[in-house]
Amino acid sequence: MTDDADADAKGRREPMRDPSYDGAFDAIVVGAGLAGSAAAVTMADEGLDVLVIERGRYPGAKNVFGGVLYTPTLRELVDVTSAPVERYVAEKRFSMLSDDDETAVSLRPGEWHDPPHNDSYTVLRGEFDRWFAEQAVDAGAVLLTETTVTGLVREDDGRIAGVETDRPDGTITADYVVLAEGGNSLVSEGADLRKPERAENVAVGVKEVLEFPERDEVIRDRFRLSNDAGASYHYFGEGAVGDAVGGGFIYTNEDTVSVGLAYRISDAAGSQPKPEQTLNAFKSHPSVAPLLRGARTVEYGAKTIPEGGSESIPKLVHDGAVVVGDAAGLVLNNGVHLEGTNMAVESGHLGGEAIAEAAERGRTDEAAFKSYPERLEASFVVQNLERYGWLMERVEADRDLIFEELPHALADAGAEYFRMDREPKEKHAEEARERLFETVGGLRGAAKLAYRYREVLR
Ligand SMILES: Cc1cc2nc3c(=O)[nH]c(=O)nc-3n(C[C@H](O)[C@H](O)[C@H](O)COP(=O)(O)OP(=O)(O)OC[C@H]3O[C@@H](n4cnc5c(N)ncnc54)[C@H](O)[C@@H]3O)c2cc1C
Image 1 (cartoon, rainbow, N blue to C red):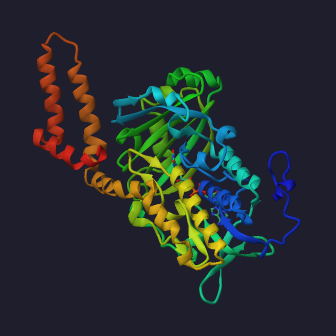
Image 2: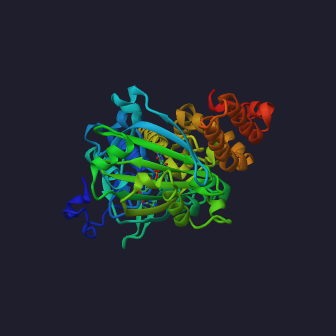
Image 3: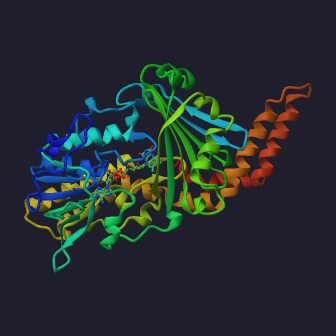
């Protein structure tokens, strides 16, 4: 059953005519993002009556993200052949930017051209989230849009037994609640299920979608792509985000590009210019501007990204409720990886599975959901968050070296090594080496640096 019968051709919905949701469902999912729809599909497949509540006009309407969707769990849950993806990622490129230099490494493994394309696709969330929520509806869930959950219903013993909403009839009770409200988790915080994240554990993400009047061929030509292959470009250094810890990105969609930055909010609040200004400076960098020439901005959004890693994961299960996705801080954002979509789908699925198992036994106590934290801990989600927990601390300690000195030194050393003049090459090689050693503290310093970051390759 869906209330989409009330939707017009553009997806706009009339206010609900039938307000009788209270007590009509086994489970309520707060938020039709990736984690919420994954939980809804899983529970509906297990025969539960599921209500998904989304504050946006449609799922994805309020969602901001970079844009690469990682699909290893998703394609186990739903048939992805009809999913609205833009391009598969055929190239990952990492660049160090100083104010006017770029030093880059590009990866284009041939196997990424073959399905399932390393499970990496650019998507636009306005389209993708809507499609994913439709899969939940096809599985039997009911989707209620333009409705904001404002709080949780608690029994006298503290058990969570439903939600308060901004609808006229307000309260909707159910045995189970899945909190999938994303990183700005006001409902969970309001109910004391998690504390507001410390500023050093939160990044601000800003993103624009740019359109090229000449459309598709421009993207293929500029990014050296064929057919539906795409590229994800990642940028570090002061040319990307000034003094902040973080980076920039460009992702190719079918006929637009997504361009943005993600950097620590404590830096954004300091001496750093406003995010829009930092983004404009990044787009004007001499290595970036030619890729975007002639494009015009058709969308702008900003959002926070939890990046506290495994240390910041709150309690995941409560009597009557589970917390999944960004609401549980499940994002790997460490400069090398920015992955939250795969973690959202995996955690939503595991949380939904735990609820279905508890429902089977007629239980709503938190111990009945314990398979969720246990399976999450054994999964790539917690394992990856734990593995890279050290990285952000180390990057913070080395921030001047990594974001400022190294981009300059790499560019200078490269320019020196390939300098064309009448000197012997040996002289240039020696000067290039000296320029690098001066930055990292000689051979010993280079060895220490490699040792400090050895776990990236382990
Ligand atoms: C700039 C940026 C770039 C990123 N780039 C990438 C990337 O390239 N690849 C990647 O894997 N990850 C990326 N991420 C992270 C990724 O977007 C998230 O990890 C992922 O979207 C989390 O999914 P979610 O379902 O938990 O939350 P969300 O996608 O945030 O969904 C939450 C949903 O809940 C709804 N909602 C919130 N509060 C309420 C309420 N009170 N009542 C009703 N509905 C509510 C929202 O409208 C939304 O639809 C990026 C994030 C940002 C900000």
